[in-house]
Length: 149
Image (cartoon, rainbow, N blue to C red):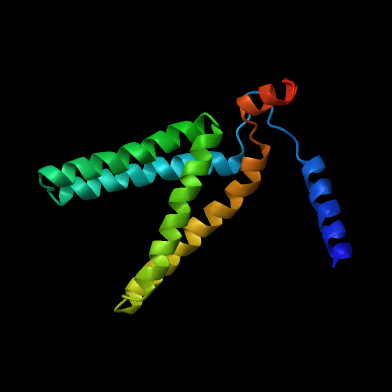
C-alpha cells in the first residue's frame, strides 16, 4: 500500500514541478472562456428576469444573482484566484441542481436541456482546475518569504 502512495506522491510532485506560473498579464484560455460565460449568463438571467416582469422581492434576487455573476466575470477577467474558486462553486452547485432536475424531467426536451447544462458546467469546472493551479495568490508568495511562526 505504501508503494502506491509513494508512486502517487512522485506523480503529484512531477505534475507540480511541470506547472509554470502565469506570466504578468497572461490569462489562461479556460479562465477567459469562464469570464465570458459568466457575463453571458448574467445578461441572459437579467433579460429573462425582465421579460418575466418580476415583483419587488424578485428584483432583489435578480439583482443579487446578476451581481454575483458579474463580480465573478470581472474577477476572472482580472485573473483573481477568489473569482475562479467562487465560480467553480457556482458551477458545482449548478451541476448538482441539474442532476436533481433530472428527477423531475417530464419530456425528452427537458432531459436534453438538463444534460446539456450538466455537460457544459462540468467541462468548464474541469478546465478551470488546471488554470487554478497556475494562478498564484499574492498573499501566498509573501507568506513563503516570511519566517515561520
